[in-house]
Image 1 (spheres, rainbow, N blue to C red):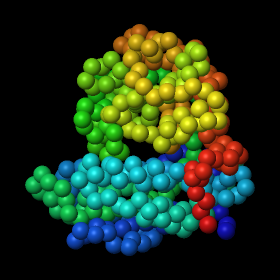
Image 2 (cartoon, rainbow, N blue to C red):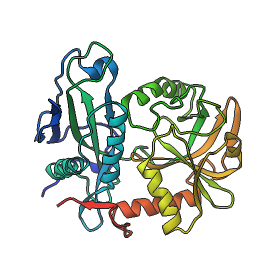
Image 3 (cartoon, rainbow, N blue to C red):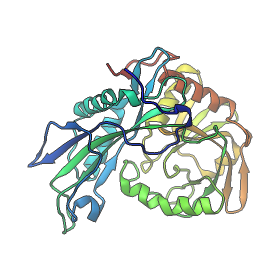
Length: 341
């Protein structure tokens, strides 16, 4: 199989049309079989539920070329499960989890020429998503939906290498208590756009959101979970019912315990503890881990001991181990890696 003639090492994190995408439709209470298509355009009614009441959710995962030359995807079963949870909360029909994984495999296999080669630093990003398609003018769930998976080759999320980020403590709330913060709904990300634009305008890389109820506990950023390392080497991550259950974060916590022998804990993290942390990172599919060097709370700077030049030592071990598992350099736990044949 001949790869596309691309400068793989120069890819940014941006959309590029590939050859195939998967499309399935829900109508009359059931899903059709779905199919691969070369058409990357979506045509919907002007009054479609997604346009009127934001009935949409999505996922994100990647396909890689391993050191052995296999094309693999990382833990797609968890993406399928999380999307099912999102659909239930949004009153959308669940796309069957086994069919979700089959569709992922079909898209990757059909676009194998677009999967970047091992060592390029790039990957094939997969975006499963679902949205309401039929006309809805009253405030109620739609009755027809479309499920799609697109694929696009991407480079590193942060071009030019991993550099520690500077965050600000945000005055906006990301998600309400008992709201939709725990699912991957488009509306959550729409709410974060103004906050991230103003953060960038003020010279910050990202926002740190605190819990909306008390504004005393660390939650997450607009698109990633937090992971901290204490000065005695313990890995801790915030526990909250209003943050997204990141697959990368869950995988890193397992790696910390089972591969690195570290103590790892998910618990509430009061913001007052942040100044005493040794390392901080943001974790998610796009970048795996992005180190944080400084957090600014309304003019009060918290400078992490790990500094502003590189990842802290524990964060680096976590990053290297998880990416080693994804790339086939380190043996993976059973079920984590699905080879596309």
